[in-house]
Image 1 (cartoon, rainbow, N blue to C red):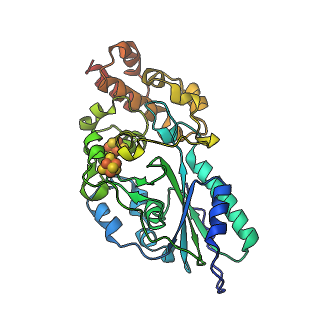
Image 2: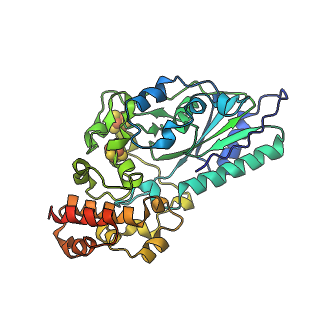
Image 3: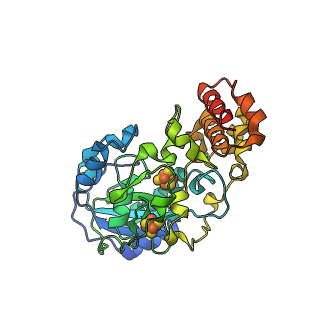
Length: 345
Ligand code: SF4
Ligand code: SF4
C-alpha cells in the first residue's frame, strides 16, 4: 500500500499524548497490539548491509528512499513518536496459499483501521501531525514494532509477539508529538539455540543474523517474480502456490496460535482450492475468486505458473492431462512451468 502521509506537522509544543487513550483507541478500531517508540534514527547497518549483500533480489522499492527509511525525521520532519500496530491474522486449515492471503487483502483492512484511528486522533487533537504506513513505502514497520515492544525479530525474520507468535500484520503511524510512555525496546529474544525455522526452510533463505535472502525465499518467488523461477528452487514449491508459511509453522512460539476473530481475515473459498484446481482456473474464475484478496498480486498467469511448479514438485501424476493442456497455454511462463512439471512426473 502506498504510504498515507499527511505531511502536516504542527510546530506547537504540546502536552504528551496519553498512551492509555491511544492504546484503547487502537484496540477500538481493530488492532490487536499497539506500542510506542521514540522516533530515533535506525542504525544504517540494519538495512544497508542487507541491501549491499544483494538479499533484496529485485525488490526495487526496498532499495529506494533509504535515508527516509533509516530516519523518520527525514521522511516526516518534526517526527517524535512512532506508533506501531499489529493485527493477528491466524486462521486454521491447510492450503497452498499462505494464511495471510486467504482472506481479504490485509492492506485494505489495516489501511481502513489506520484511517479510523487517525480520525479519532484528529477529532481529539486536531493539531497533531501524522504520517501512516502499511507494509509498503519508506517505513520499516518491523523495526518499529520491535522498538515499540510488540515483540522481537526471530531467526525466521518475523516479528514474534509473546501473545500471538508471528502470525501478525503490521502498520505504523508517525506522530509529531510525544506520548507519555514509551516501550523499553523489543521483548526478550526467545529463539535461543533453536533453529527449527532454518531447518524447515526448503531453499536455505534464512541466514545468520536473522536475515532473509529474498531471492531464495518462496514468498518472494511466488509473488514478486513475474518471470521463470530458477530451476534450483522449483522443487521446493511442493504444496506452495502463493507465499510460504513453512518457517512460521515450524516455530514453537507459534504452537498455541490465537485464532483471529477479525472477520476480514476469515478465509475465502479460494483458500479451499487444491493445487490442481488453482492450476486449472479460467481467467474469469480467477478474477471472481481472488477479487479483494492479495492473490491478484501474483496475477492469473503467475498463480497458474506457481501451481504448475507445485504439481511438478510433488510429482502429481494425476495432473498430467491438466499439465499437457497448460503446456500449450498462451502464457510463456505457464507453458514453461507446465513443461518442467511434466518432465518430473
Ligand atoms: S517463507 Fe518459506 S522460503 Fe521464505 S524463508 Fe520462510 S520457509 Fe524459507
Ligand atoms: S523456529 Fe526457533 S529459531 Fe526460528 S523463530 Fe521460532 S523460536 Fe526462533
